[in-house]
Length: 565
Ligand SMILES: CC1=C[C@H](O/C=C(C)\C=C\C2=C(C)CCCC2(C)C)OC1=O
Ligand SMILES: CC(/C=C/C=O)=C\C=C\O
Ligand SMILES: [Fe+2]
Image (cartoon, rainbow, N blue to C red):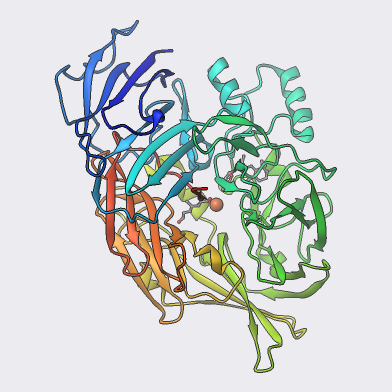
């Protein structure tokens, strides 16, 4: 494997992590290049980042393209096209960025974002967005300054793939090819035991109440603890309980008090609702929901909670054991669409595990719930639960639209399926049906709606604002940032033509009393192949700062905030 050396030097007298020299493994398809990162100004407020190609190391085999000239300054050689859907350029990088605009001085802490950033092994290209090996990105904000870093997560799946230069574990859509029939039989056995499933925790990253930072995916074994300062992989998060099972929701509800998740039961269709306290690794049962439809539980990529309840969605897009066993992906991957099985929403009491409502709702497709809350009558009695999600109009084609080939081949056609803020109203008076309606006119956000966040202080409570990716059409992927006002039923949109923004992440100003008093952070891949961190004002949704990366980064999924201690 070729290697890459980085030297980042600076003259300013601050953190030691700013000066480093490391040798990194470099993904095969890029030329080995030495980059020198210089901070030419030692004024701590404003600095100039000059990225200079200082040397090119002759590779063992002639490179496919000539190396960039040795004297180029202020430029990074790029292919001048969107890099959101191409593998990350190298294992890791860290350095301070030049900030345009003003980062609020109160914004002190670290935004971490996880996502599938490496989609090939040698000449073999993965097919689906969700297959890539996890790339962590770190934006460390301190006194108006910004230090960026990225690094590959050292999961067993990633390490084995690098070592053997082939896929060794089952990813979202990719399955290792058995060498012979005996290996095929072994693989089937490993599938049932979970041994062949990936631990490539490429979906999200959460900060537990005890400070541990854990990367997650849909497989339980893909829970991996990382160091938020260095992005080092610390090791597996071992759950100290006997639930077994192979999968959980990719989006647990996490705050300083608890970690709640759903464990789908594929044998007796249902879900176990479990809770883990900070400082422990032991999940305890809150209760169980039996599915009302079949033949398997609905996919629970995420779920919402209110102050008193856990809402368990039973989506007609259900896990599918046959598809799990297939070597080649189906259009719905590990799932199957069962409109005849209907869709349901169940409401479980957090305290006792009893089910207080279980209603049939219109068919729906969602990855992400936004939030939920309890609606009370004049006497303060809870009469309904409201649950909002990014809803794809009960159309499953979004899963196919996230194939890399599709994402990489935008030709100006408007091919992103419509989505909306789907608002469920779940009555608690014993009525058998719940409602599902658009919370606002989807034209407000271009009929694109996914990758959402809220002010975390409003988790489970009546709230007004949601942040998400929307659409400015024509497009093949959500390409705007949108702030949705669920009371005025209006949206404010940010758009940069040809760019792909990642999930907008809200961070509240310490001491804030207004829901939208804070900033929204997103990472942008632009049409020139560059990338930058963007900070918007949470209230006006206007840009307040941006900081360009040395090179564009691949698209990423979900993030978390680690406040400065
Ligand atoms: C979204 C999203 C994709 C990514 O999924 C990763 C894996 C490996 C998922 C695997 C599976 C399912 C999606 C369904 C059931 C079985 C299993 C193979 C575990 O993680 C995400 O969050
Ligand atoms: C990127 C995405 C879903 C991610 C799941 O974690 C959906 C985009 C759709 O419009
Ligand atoms: Fe997700």
